[in-house]
Length: 132
Image (tube, rainbow, N blue to C red; front, side, top):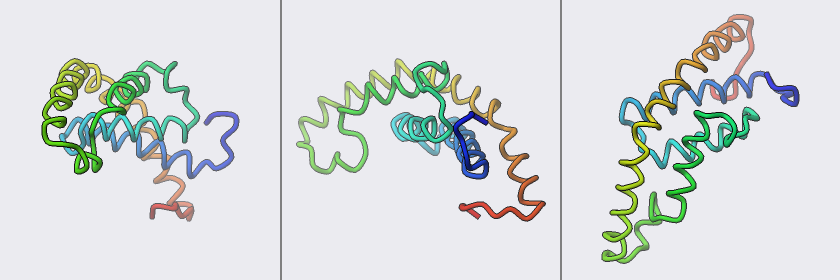
């Protein structure tokens, strides 16, 4: 646990979410933009420097590439022709990034697998987690 973290339960929950979001990408439940957005938030929550950690860096760079493009709910407000043009950019970014993102996701699933066991240990001693 990083030195500045004061709430172990919250930190462990965030570590579990990292593994879960990575698994969601690997299993096709989330796309690259949704996963990269989640990983950026979670890196901050667990106090990992997202540009220094290689796996989080992959998602930070994807997010940086996609954040000015029409992804998510704002697509409803874009002109149809503009969306077609921007979708080509999005597809190119996703194609270029997919292999690295999947490798980073596999690493994160493995790296944070311990968090589920630790959360289970704390639950056995009666600790209630916010997401319970």
